[in-house]
Image: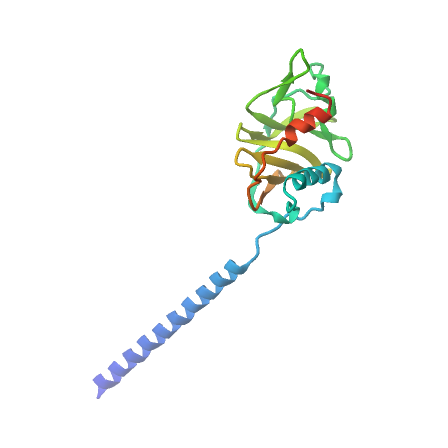
Length: 218
């Protein structure tokens, strides 16, 4: 009799464990399903908030009428390591004034972004000569410091830059693969959020060339 009771007890415990495991698995599956249906973060910025952004959007809409900031989704969030930059600030005697019209000041005029002077120089015919690499530098005018906050090789480049506010820089980027990105950099906590366009731009862009021409270069 005792053996029968012992066997029944073991079977009851085993059945209970199987039921608990089943419930746990179902719970995990439910959590995973919830994660799958979450929408990716979209870029939250209005094109009319800045004239540079507005013109950049209008340019790509001229190539592809369906182009929209609503189609940029979060790709990456990371921490940057700012290091000493390799360009001169406008406070240095070596600063070439040809770049004066290309620097992008913060709203309070205390800082600016230089993404041109490392990337190209001018020959005697006033024609840009490009380097394959591009540095994006943050220049603090008051403290007279130059910090590199970004670097691109020949396959990717920054087309334009603007300040969202005095602490946030927006980079408008393109690549050889014709994939557009918008990067948001907080220059205080050195955090970057990168948003990627959902599809490839089918028509080759000459935005960068047009930008230089509009500034008076050939």
